[in-house]
Image 1 (cartoon, one colour):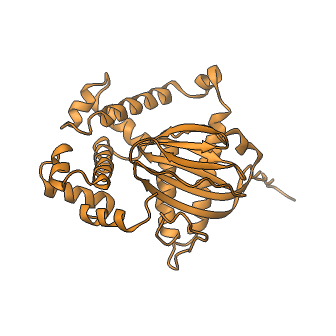
Image 2 (cartoon, helix red, strand yellow):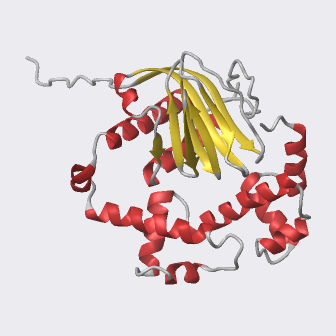
Image 3 (spheres, rainbow, N blue to C red):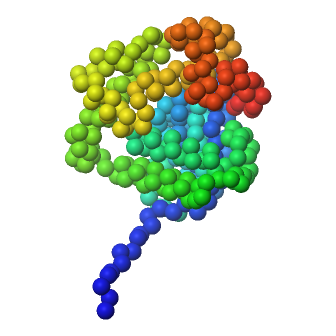
Amino acid sequence: MEYYKRTEVENKLHISNFISFHYFEYVKEFAGIGESHDFWEMVYIDYGNVKVVSDDREFLVSSGEGFLHAPNELHNILSAGDFASAFIISFDCDCAELSDIQSKILKFYGEESQIVKKLYAVGQTVFEEPYDIFSQQKLIPKSDMPYGGLQELKNLTEMLLLILIRNSSVKGDVREKYLSKDFANERMIVDKVIRIILSSIYKKTTLDNICSQLSFSKSYILKVFKKQMGCSVMEYYNQMKIKEAKRLISEEQYTYTQIARLLHFSSVHHFSSSFKQITNMTPSGYQKSVKNRSVI
């Protein structure tokens, strides 16, 4: 006698291959090379703003936003007039619903942005560097990649796409009902904190200063931000300062001491140690890498 009935899993979305895995830092004059290919390509803007070309349309895509290019779509990335960085991953995928999120600006909120961060971190354990070679034709898996590393990368990418498709299908009043009031409030708080942080990059500020500008308790703000973004408020603040420092270094207009002063680090030593802690490179090492690699 059969006591147990199995529930078949319907695979709505399946990634069969990865083609590229990139992280580019763009100088403010860059102009990419238009291309088209027979696979999907997802772009996530990690910092700054870029112009994304999709066939005959142009979109301004900003930090925390993404864009999905469909197979055989002519696409390009152009300068929006300043330093920017982007994570790009391409893949083969059979899913009709991907058409719901292609060729439009995608908003990456807490859950989605955390998956992207995890996606990039896992990819670094799976594929050999460098990740900024535009003409790369084949990914090289690491000989010491973690057990199931490629499958983890596939699962994370599929999860991200499923969430983006699901969110795109819920709109207007229905979306308001779908998103709980608490969840909507959390997103609002995180958005406000990020706006305050980005407006304070060239200021000396503290956690108390940031929290005082919101009508919520400090403990609640810290809890919500950590939950949504996967890091503390001040960790995010320092990350944004270092990303701005990378932009300033790439433009070669200021010394390290001047950059430390502009970004309100207590000393050039403090700046250098913070830079290395976040990027695993010294400021001078980063400057050499910018000169030596093919920055688009």
